[in-house]
Every structure is written in C-alpha cells, then in structure tokens.
Amino acid sequence: MKLKNLLTLLPFVMACANVAQADSLDTIKERGTLVCGTLGTSEPFSFQDPKTRQVVGYEVDLCKEIAESIGVKLEVKMISVAARIPELAAGRVDVVAANLGWSADRAKQIDYSYADYVSPQKILIRQADADKLKKNADLAGKRVSAVSGSSSEAGAKRLIPDVTTVTFKDPPTAFVALQQRKVDGFVGSELMLLKFEQGAQKTPVRLSMIEDPLFTEPWGLGVKKGETALLGKINETMAGLEQSGKAQQIFDRWFGPQTEFHTKRIFKMEEIKG
Image 1 (cartoon, rainbow, N blue to C red):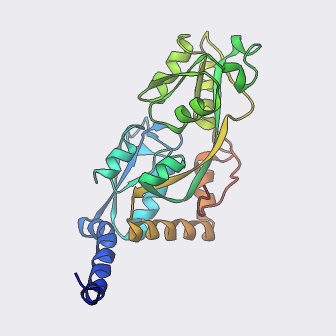
Image 2 (cartoon, rainbow, N blue to C red):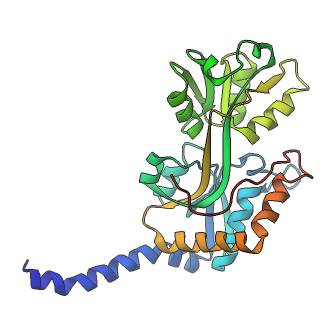
C-alpha cells in the first residue's frame, strides 16, 4: 500500500484503537455492574462475614467505591490466587482486587492501578523451631508452603537458596501443612500470617513469625492490558479517595486501632513505581 493511502487511513485506525480501549468501561456501564474478582479467603482484605455470609473487606470496599464512581452496581466474584490473571484475560471479571502484588512479569500481562496496599511478606514458623530458624536464610534447603501462583511463592524461590516450595490453592491449607509439620515455614503477607499466628495460640502447635520481612511489595488492582479508559477511571477514583481522606477511613475500618490487626498506613494511593 502506498504511503499516501496509509496516511489517509491513519486517523481511522487511531479512532478504532481509542474505541477499543474504551470498550470495557462502556460495557460495564451498559451492563450496569462492575464485576470484581477477589479471594474471599483473606481477612481483612476479602472474606465471608460469618453472620451474613457476604464477602466483605478492605478490597471489597475499594471495589464498591469504584462501582459507585462509574455509576453501576458491584458484583463480587470469588476467585483463586492462581485464577486471578486468567479470569481477567478471559473477561470473566472486570477488575481483580485480590492481594495482587506488583511484579515485572505480571506487569507485562496486566495493567496495575495505583497502589492500594503495601505488604511485608514474612515467614511463619513453629515456635518450637524458633531457636534454629531465626532469619529467613535459615530456611535454605528446607520446605516452605505458599499459595500456588502467589508472589510469596515466587519470592521464596528467588530469595531463599535451595528452598522447596510446597504450594496449595488457598492460605488455610498452606497453614495446615505447617501445623502438620509437612513444611518448615509458611510464606505470605504479614497480616494474613498474623491471623493464623493468633488462631494457633489456642492449639498445641504454637507459631511465630520471623521478624525481618522476606521482601516488601506494593499491591494494586488489576485490569486487562490496554484498558486505558477503565484504568483511568479506577485511578481517578483512588486519587479522589486519597485527597478526600476517605482512603484513610476505609483503611482504618479494617486495620485501625479498633481492629485486631491495628496497622499503621505507610503508603498513599499513587502510581506503583516498579
């Protein structure tokens, strides 16, 4: 094709590209619902309220704010850790709010929103082993459990020499493996491990965390690659929450002094710098 013809077609091609980028947000508006994929097994981020059986939590609240900003209802869909990116790629969810740690590899597959959390990743061990497992490097050559497909699994492989990762579909089964002595440690986010540590105080197998984080990672909401209109709306909403102070209010609802987690907010909802 001649250069003149290509130049003639260029505005049309660019217009089509812009329409394609806006399709997802337009579809959400036409449908009247935002489908948010979340774990439902990770308190206080997303979990089933024992009284109502509804999925609630910090990440669910963020999805509610985004749905309200778009002007649609929220539909929460429970997904597994391993299914987060496949569900997004297949279009079965519009956004993933599921403990989604940023990594260079994932950023090639999906687009990330502004940071919604920053998570220290730590290792939970049995108290009986605390004298010989004082630091992360002490687990070199040993077995640790992790959720399949998680950044915790990848981080353990990357940072602990000769470690063997034993993976499970969800945190509770990875935790049971530690209690049953099938592994020497359980790698995960600090808040998640804290919940298991507290619960184990009433059992014969007491647990504790290694103090130093294995690594620290920012988390964000995930959208399909190239959905600039939807991503822009999500980031606009998160920036508004930050500016108004509502981001802190939502955080305090799930992590504040009145909760069992009582965590200080050390991040802002802004672009993740990988």
